[in-house]
Amino acid sequence: MVLLMGVPWIIFVMVVLSISLFYHHHQILVISFILVLLTMALMFIELDCRERMGGQWFLFLGLLCILALFNAILVGLYNYHTHMYHYWAYDEGRIYTNVLPSEPSAAHADAGKMVFASSARVDTSRALGYKAGSTYCVAPILDEVQTNRVEYWAAGIDCCPARGDFACDDAWNPAAKSAVVLVDSDGLFASKREEFLKAVKQARSVFNLIGPVEPLLLRWVVDPQQIQDDCWSGAVACMVSFIFIYFLLSIITGTFLHLWSKRVVSTQSITTP
Image 1 (cartoon, rainbow, N blue to C red):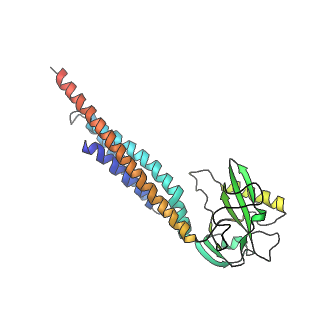
Image 2: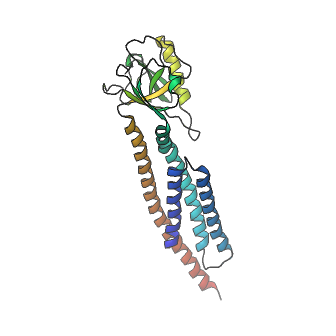
Image 3: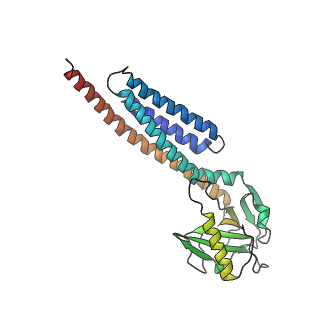
C-alpha cells in the first residue's frame, strides 16, 4: 500500500519540479528523464504479466505511475508557460534605463524590463479597448513633446472600457515610470499579441496616431523586479498546491487499490481447489 501511494506521488513531484524549473534550459534532459520514468512504469506492468507476485500489485503500480506522469506533464507545462516562461523572459531580457518614449521601439526589441525617463506617461485619454472575448486594452506611452507618433503602448486585459480610460497595472500611479515587456505565449496557449495589435491599429485610426507596424507592448508598473518575483512566487505556489493535492489523491487511490487487490487475492485463494 505504501508503494502504491508513494511511488506515483514521488514521480509526480519529480516531473513537476523538473519541467517547472529545468525545462527552459535543459529540454532534452527533462524529456529523457520522463522517458526513463515511463520505461520504469512499463516494466512494472510487464512484471505483473509474468505473475511474479500474487495479486495485481505491479499492474496497479505501473498504471498509477503512468497516470502520475501524464498529470505531472500537464501540471508542469501549465506552470512553466503560465509562470516560469515569463520569469525567464524578464530575467534574460535586457534592462534599459532612462528611455524616452520618442526613442524607436526597435532599438529595445530585446528588452525584458524598461525604466522610462521622468517625462514619460500613459495617455489614458487615448486608450482603447478591443473586444474579442476578453477586452484587450492599449494606451500610448508619450511625453510632453510627442504629438501623434507612438512607439510604445501600455497593454492589459479586461482593465478598460471601450474608449478614454485605462486602469491596467499601475497606469494611474504617478510613481510608475517603468515597464516589463508583455510576454506572449510560445506555443502552448493561444497568442494574444495579434489581438493587442488589432487594438493598437484601431486606436491609431480613432485617435489619428502613427507608429511602427510592430510596436513594443508593455505592462506599465512601479517595480519591474516585483513582477518577475511574482512570477517565481506564482510558480512555487502552483507547484506546492498541486503536489499537496496529488499527495491526498495518491493516498486515496493507493488505499483503494491495495484493498481491491487484497480482496482479489483472498477470492482466488478461496476458489482455488
